[in-house]
Image (cartoon, rainbow, N blue to C red; front, top):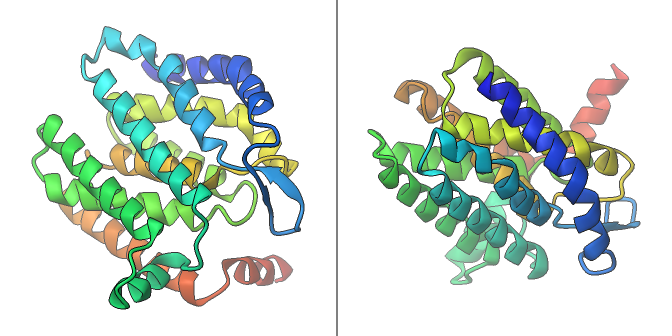
Length: 252
């Protein structure tokens, strides 16, 4: 029942607020997409703000909700900084190479602070494996970010993984928050599908972090496997073109 309330709340608040928020930033967060067309970027900022209103009902059952609000806003803000401060270093390997050359990129700073924020959240919630949970969340935040180079990919991935974790996991604050955000994504999806908006790092990092949180309740061995998969995925995404690979698979 709580799951349905969360999704419904996300849809309602998303339907009311997201179109109005998009009107506010029209002409502000404008970038060129892969087609060289102008689109609104960093819509994840509005997703984060809307999520606070959509999850106010959760304080009925969880007193820690304001801590999660702070975390969500912080993750989205870090992503927004990376969106605004465009840099040449791209991908996990690009940031590692820059770091070895003595250069600190916004992507590196973002990953470090997402890790620290996730560690702090794990401590607040008195997790048994705080370091493992923090690394898992940071890795997922960056992994979903690699999917945001084309429309719908990050949203589709988020919804797919969230459905799986909902079916096989237990209901907790992180799951319900993620479901509320899923409701908002149903509102945002048509904008992405018609290539009017992009989540940007402000959104893709947020979705990835929320997925990471939804996986905290699973066994440590599964978390280690997911971390390894996430790292390998990012190395693969840095080395090969995901778009070309998907196009080839569609042609078969």
